[in-house]
Image 1 (cartoon, rainbow, N blue to C red):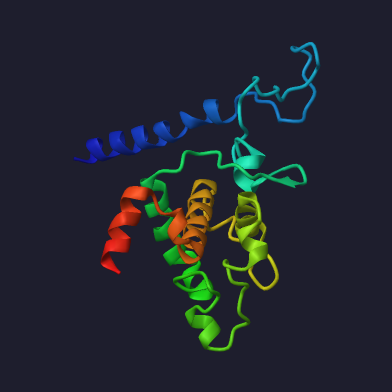
Image 2: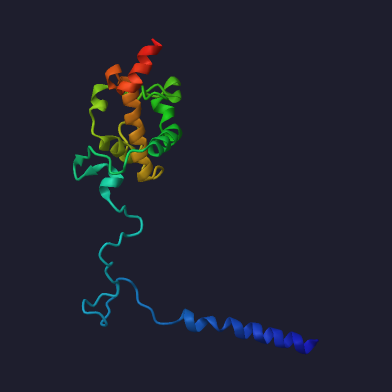
Length: 188
């Protein structure tokens, strides 16, 4: 029994020494000089087309602007699924301030927080769609940035839903397709 214990302890001590060879192997520091490569840099440049970790694939998609110009076209197709997803995200992040209809009368406004502008004002109805993505990304006035909370694809979905809210509150009977208009006129 004593022999087995000594063998086990000997193997345990020997096994702990195995790691040292890999732990102490030569390695280079990222910004160190290296004579192996022609540019003498240890750190290698990224291949073309690779997106660095933590960087967006497209600044336009993330921020809603190309340089200093806000985009006016959606970079994604407008679908019912996108609008449903946008409503879901709006109900999570936006409704507390902006309200269900986008009038700026959400619950915290009713409790004394400064009201945001209504999405139905002429200024915001005429704003390019990139404006909403930019505001979600960077914040505006007392609204803090949501870039760390809302993914870029969700920002575009919310912006699409805001456009749907604007259209729903400012539509006229002439905006309704003919077949649907006849149904509505028949109900009146």
